[in-house]
Length: 346
Image 1 (cartoon, rainbow, N blue to C red):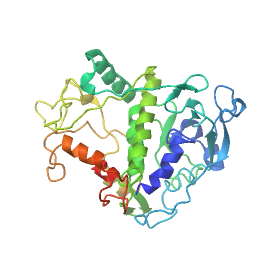
Image 2 (cartoon, one colour):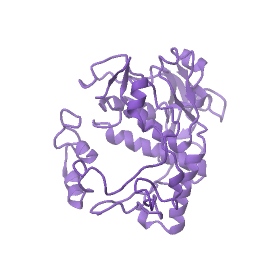
Image 3 (cartoon, rainbow, N blue to C red):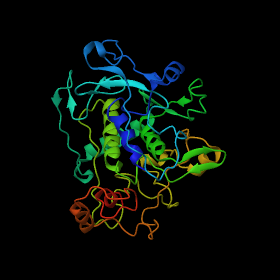
Image 4 (cartoon, rainbow, N blue to C red):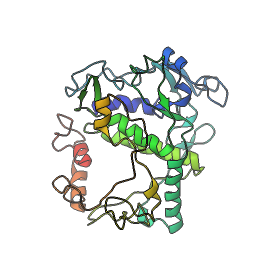
């Protein structure tokens, strides 16, 4: 269902860099359907006085929806973000953000004209101090509230069409957990009915661009809370790995000595609480994940369902994927054959 995600992605790339800007999570903004906050630099909406952007009607794709979703007007994510806002900041040049107060990814400087190239590195090639700094950044993000964004705890209908805003604070790390949940959650149809064959972030053409922007946004938020403008997310090259090489206390947490489903108490991640893991509970209540804590991280590497994921991909698997020349093929979902996107997605 990622045909929808292309519209979702457009909103992230152009008018907004997140779900719900804090400055627009109020009755006035929701009832007027306008999210054009002032840029701090000159106090004008969207930084218009400094030619950074202007308040405009949103642009929506006119492309038909896929047959996988036979509804219209039942999901807040349709034609995102028009259910909540139909006027947002449209930024000029290399400016971006909900108030045009940021630079597009890959640019920096006062006027966002300086090209900036950053490199993501293999986590095993980081020095000990670099690795420890990365883990500390993650822990900071888990414990510091987002200053720019809030999350919705109810649908637009549950908010009485905007007259009763339902938002709450969330920490920087969990903001992205919630955003991923929100993009891929089931559609609530009322009563006890849900539609499961929908996903605004997976199993369709937008999978790659959606997640690329998602990671860039995540990096940007870490850079902001740490003041480290050079931060990038390290990667784990799992080709041909026989087990989870990062599942130890030096990296992402080892196994608990007495409970194989929990993390080692020596890992900082053992104290973390997860959110948005109870989709069936939310569905039965016709509710959104409210980002309340739902228990510790549970992980048991090596004991996954082998019928679904028998092993980690090999170098040959990766080379086969890269050899595919067709980005997408019909029906452009999880059944697509010889699709680079579908093969990469797994």
